[in-house]
Length: 67
Image (cartoon, rainbow, N blue to C red):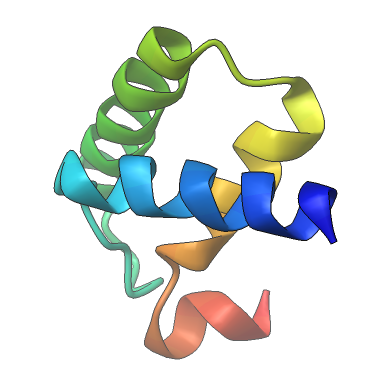
């Protein structure tokens, strides 16, 4: 389906920008750096809020996936 293909293309474009990952450990500065890095990419891609959440959450690892 075309929508799935578009979302897959969006994810590919997002990943080509080498977004940062976040592992969820208590690290306020690391969390802020992660957020700023992801925001910089999704703003350039002109994503909707829902797309921003999906793309950003894709980069959560470890403990951060349990939040």
